[in-house]
Length: 191
Image (cartoon, rainbow, N blue to C red; front, side):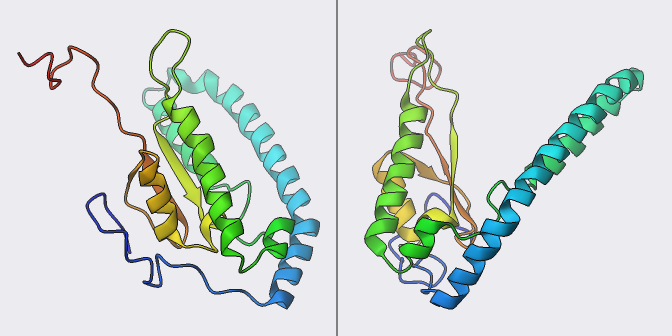
């Protein structure tokens, strides 16, 4: 269920790349109510976790004299922070509740999301250097109504390259790096 750059993404009719089934209204309403009640508590816990990690990091700074401690601590911090989602998969927002099954809404949502990330990735910094934004993950909640096939097709039209992805969770994309003029591998530098 992983897709690679060379894979044909025109198979949007396959279950994993096509639009998800329309969820029943009662289920969406129930999830929306749980979201309204539980999500603020979730965010409060994230703030507490962040504060606790900062306190632990301050005390761990003292232990950096131990060889290898800093590298191991950084791995633990990355693993902890990397698994925490600001918008968990079980949440249902008001627009998702109102527009379930509306493919035009989800197409516009994917296009707006990709336009924002494309603008960030293609922008130049003040120094003239290229942007540091090189990767983008399109979460399932953005393309659920149109499928991962549409998200990949829309991204490739904007210049993104697909990376190995699980369409049941997210679509991963990478902005191509253009070689610098005169760099090894470019036409000007090879003559």
